[in-house]
Length: 203
Ligand SMILES: CC(C)(COP(=O)(O)OP(=O)(O)OC[C@H]1O[C@@H](n2cnc3c(N)ncnc32)[C@H](O)[C@@H]1OP(=O)(O)O)[C@@H](O)C(=O)NCCC(=O)NCCS
Image (cartoon, rainbow, N blue to C red; front, top):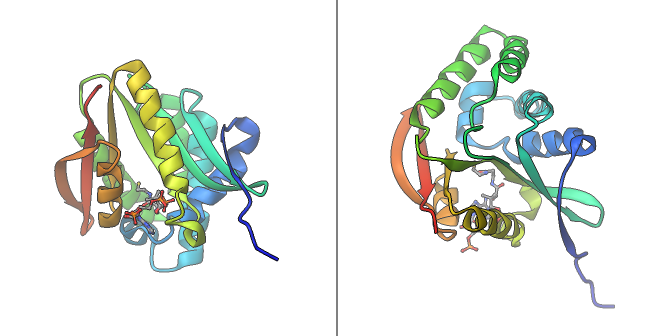
């Protein structure tokens, strides 16, 4: 009998989805070079630490919109975005993130701070929707799940008529974002890892 993949279902996630979304972001980004540099060489530790941080971020940032793609009832892709004027976490969220980061030990905590400060320094001043984090489960990459999330994101940008902005540490993701109208506006090596800062002009 012919095998068919279950349909992909795109929906806006809510508070009840935070734990599953954070877990996906933790495992989906475990091989990102900056994560290796910040969280350390052990993959299980990287997954646990990033998921734990993402849980704090998603639950403390009510302005974030979180889109999710499900397949067969399981969450397989996530894209969060902050609306114009809300791309940096507010004081309470920032404090919670720092408090969680400190539990990772001094080396990782310091690296987290360096990474965050470096990314924040590149933030553009024009009104924009700030995309990220974005992640697709590793074994399901290259099947159009990221494209689905990006089509939703760019449709939203176009309906608002504002710029989009994002950061990435994955060279292969640069081309992916370029296909959705983003262009590299800056590059910087942070903690020994190249990072790209990308903007999508308003349409
Ligand atoms: C980048 C990412 C979100 C793309 O999602 P996806 O579902 O794999 O994307 P799609 O299947 O819709 O499109 C695949 C395209 O993405 C690009 N891509 C980027 N990273 C990829 C990866 N690890 N595996 C496969 N394709 C990848 C390819 O260039 C591919 O282009 P092609 O269609 O011309 O072959 C996903 O690969 C991912 O989660 N990567 C790890 C986390 C990450 O880097 N997030 C974004 C940076 S902040």
